[in-house]
Picture 1 (cartoon, rainbow, N blue to C red):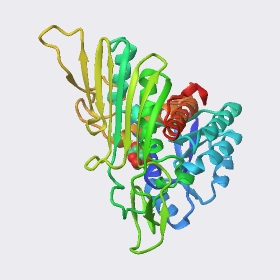
Picture 2: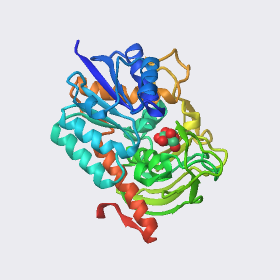
Picture 3: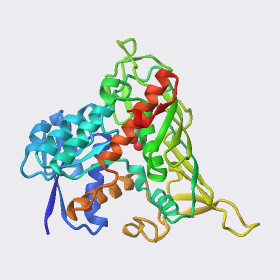
Picture 4: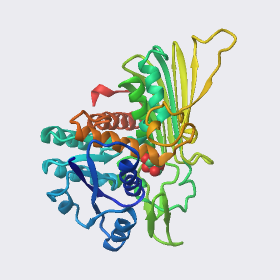
Length: 386
Ligand code: SOE
C-alpha cells in the first residue's frame, strides 16, 4: 500500500487539532493509503521539538520553504495564521504537493483566487478546513435537503457567537490585526456559517451588512497560545483594525433569504455556532453546543403529532459514526477534523474531487468581501460584482 507523507505547518491550536486527526485516522478509519506524520514546521525550534514529540511527528523544520520542497513530503497542511496561507499554498502547489489549508483561505478575495489558480494549474488536490461541515448532524441535515425532505429553501438564519475578547484589557492578538487575519469576527467565525449556508442552499446572490469595532485599542500581547493571551499592565497599545461584530442579511441564487450574525462580544456564548433552515416541506436546526443532535420538523408528519423531533446523530447509521463507538456514544469537536482529513486523504488516494475545495474557499472570501464593502458603502452588494 502506498503511504502518504504529511508535512504540517503550525503546532498551536489548529496544529494540535490536525495532529490529533492524523493520529486517530488510521486507528479508526480504513484508509486507502498509509499515513505518515513526516514533519511538522514552526518558527520556534524549542517549542516545535516539544510539539513534534508530543504529537508524534517524525521530524521538524523551522523553515516552511524547506518543508514544502522536501521530496519525502506528499501533502502540505497549513494551520498557521491567515497571512501565511497564500505564499505557502502557492509554493507547495508548485512543488506538486497536495494542499490542505485552514479557513479563511486568504487575507482577501484576490489572494484566495490566486491560491485556487495555483492549485488548478498544478493539478494537485486542494481542500479548505471548514470543519463544521463534518459534524454527523450537519451531514444528516444536508441529506435531508438532498432527499427533498426540506423542499424549497425559503429562510436560512445563522449566528456564531463567542465572548473571549469582551474585556478591553484582552490583548491585541493576531485575530484582531487585519494584516495577519484579513477580517475579524466575519472572517474568523462568519466564514464557517457562510460555508454552511452555501453547503445547504448554494451560492449567495447579494448581501447587506453592518460591522462594528467596539474596542479600538488594546494592549500589545506578550504571549499568545490558542485563544488565550497575556499583556503586561500599562504597556504599549495597538489599534484594532478589524470588526468585533458583523451582522448581514442576504439573498441566495435559489431565492432564499438569510440573516447572519458573527460576534466575539456575546457575553456567555463560548463557541456557539447555530444554523436553521426552513423549507416548504420541513425545517432543521443545528447548534454546535449540542453537536450530536439535529432538530427536524416535517410538514408530512401526521396532523396533531407534528413538532420538531430531536434526532441523535450519534446513532450508528449516521455519517461517520460507524468508525467510532457503539451506537449513542457521542463524539466532539476534534472529530470534525478527523472527518475532514479523512475525506482529503481519500480524495488523494482515489483521485476524487475534494470538498470543500479551494473554489469553496474563494466563494466564501467573495461573500466576506461583499459584506465588508456593503458595510462601508451602507448599501446592498451583488456577489457577482466582485
Ligand atoms: C476562534 O474564534 C476560533 O478558534 C476560530 O478561529 C475557529 O475557526 C472556530 O472554529 C472556533 O473559534
